[in-house]
Length: 137
Image 1 (spheres, rainbow, N blue to C red):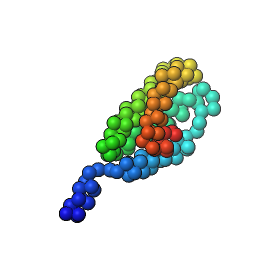
Image 2: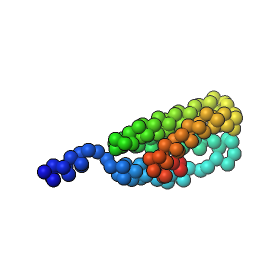
Image 3: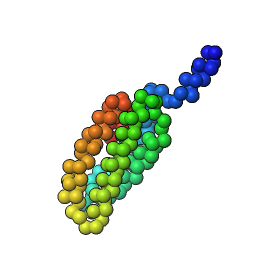
Image 4: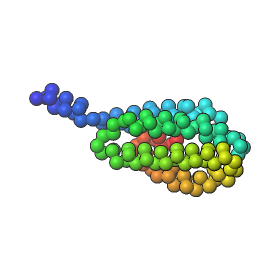
């Protein structure tokens, strides 16, 4: 009976600690990759920076999407994935607008007004999930 009970626990899914460890590994990997991308020094550097950073964020999103959160984290996990994708899409929009001749500084500043609250909501969700490595990105 004990063996069956233990097997049932193993089959029940990821524990909160396992989920947090997996998400932490993914987000730390993202941070390491982003650290290698040259930060923009002037407005014209923003678009090349975003073109390098967005695929890194998309990769993170895709990896996080493959995690199986424990039942108690499913809602927040889905929420952070949705918020991350909204930000990625917003950054892709910035890239597109600048590629079409938009002023980099004005375009990015306008996007920050929309994306800032989304980023804040994502950070809050990661904090509730207790995954600081993802909250601090």
